[in-house]
Length: 297
Image (cartoon, rainbow, N blue to C red; front, side, top):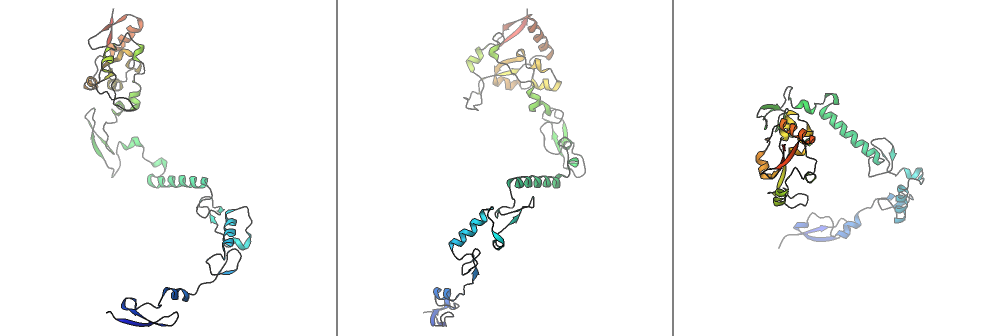
């Protein structure tokens, strides 16, 4: 059996025995310890009476005081303002009673966030007049500037930039949305039944990747530019002729991918075909490819 210790309680003064684990305790029970604690006397924040509670003497005083704090139209009086928590708005410097907010209104909060964002941007980049332009970054000039040697996927030439680019600045317009949008077909092929043979379309259907709820058809038909968009953007051809129905050809999408950026006819031939077609000096004939190509009469 373990060693037994004889101790005297500091609260009630009685003698009691304990084991080695509890030999440093000063009280023989929890009730004796709680009874020996001297409670601090406080003043009620609402009525001013003496109480042992931290703030209020009763629930009624607590409710009365808190309700007065919530209602700004009620005059709290000089005695109660002493205990009211009032903050100063960090943006407009006005005093307000919103204890959980640093700002007096949502407008001050929004403007403060915008001001902080602009300040952080100035710290990072400096004034607007000294900030580097995105076009100037491609030149990658200046001391201690990080430079990357890139190879253009179109021209195979080497150029320097501040980050990795697939195409050089000379040829990036060939693959941008702005450059391709001007040469996009905007007509309906069913409005020109004398120029297109729809038997190929009836047999295979339109090519589709299955997006936007459409059924997937990887072996379908797609529209191809006879004079390619790549050649048109590179040489600055007139979009009127490139988007004309005579420049459109129906073919299987697999063959269209093999054709890539090559042109099946010259631009001069296309211009002459369009002029003859508008003058009525050509008539359509059917070809083996499933399309109807105009020919001179």
